[in-house]
Length: 202
Image (tube, rainbow, N blue to C red; front, top):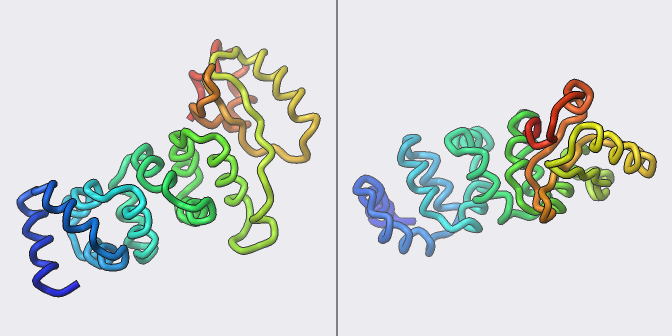
């Protein structure tokens, strides 16, 4: 990216010209966008990122240095991270990205991933060191309905757990099998009287 093009982009950002900015940046290489993002103040970074289509935003994010990437992620809501990045990434890249964040942040972001199978695959990879043989293992998923009571949940978990070796997360779905959140095992043990599962999911 030459200086003239860079200045044009900076002017469009300063003027908050969404249409022209989108037209220009969608023709750029992810590495060039990443370099530009690393130089922008937080407010401008956020504005530029929100003009990028999901696949380009994801590619640009992965081109950034880890520290700079975390700064961008800190600017975005967990729902935006799930919608903009994870759904447009390979599962292993998504797991690498989440591995840089703390566990609470990971769980919150994953609760916004609509595809339950994708969320399961990402969580499976998070359990293992990068590039180890364990990283290719499939996650055995435990699933409960958000409208179940805790006794109903416990009964279903007992049945499912009998066929599994290890359990780390429980996936909560709605009546149409769409992922609504993640239920940490600790909450199952500490919320015995909750009326519905959806009241305690993350």
